[in-house]
Image (cartoon, rainbow, N blue to C red; front, side):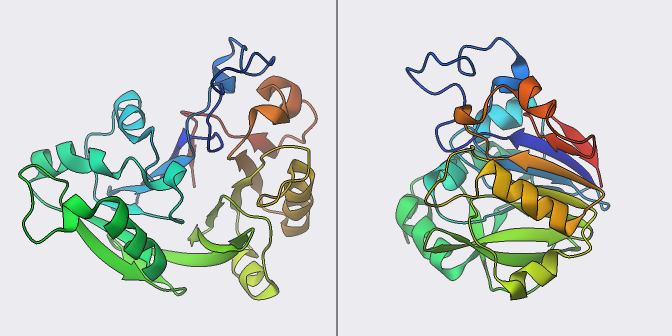
Length: 254
């Protein structure tokens, strides 16, 4: 599979509106971070996106993604869902509804946030969405198996996903032993690395680093990064070669 990091920033993105800190004023493109999302090009050459936040349209254009087979959601927070309306060009080009996978709670929230797309009498041109409700067990997206990993985002359960030997987790500050066992043996791990200071709903950078060293994947990447973490190049100098900060546009083969 080929993984493209569409966005690696936290809920406000980087730079943050009105902020003049060294990261937000940096001219290094590595320090420009849209809201967190990845694109997966599967072995079957299918196009799958995990989370469609407010930067979804820009991410599709910048990365020249011209087909979309499915969106898989981690949770219902708007920095992960609010770009869903912009699937409409894919509806038009592909002449079909887009499969959207989410658990029951997220499905219900999508029906509220995008009520116009699910009403009995639809306005012409609304996004065409084929909702697929999932549970905390393996499911298939275009012949690719996704294994949910339920982690805690403060008091909110959210899904990370393991696809073969690749694991993707954002918005996490606690993983139970049962869910941790699903990650063991993964070769490529992506996990949130928000900031150094304690946060109510995210691991600190150091806590995630400790988890990475415990799991010992072949390689690991941080995502969902805040401007408070520091400049990309400065932080990377403190890390071993097999642990990197992801950045917008980064592509990896897994």
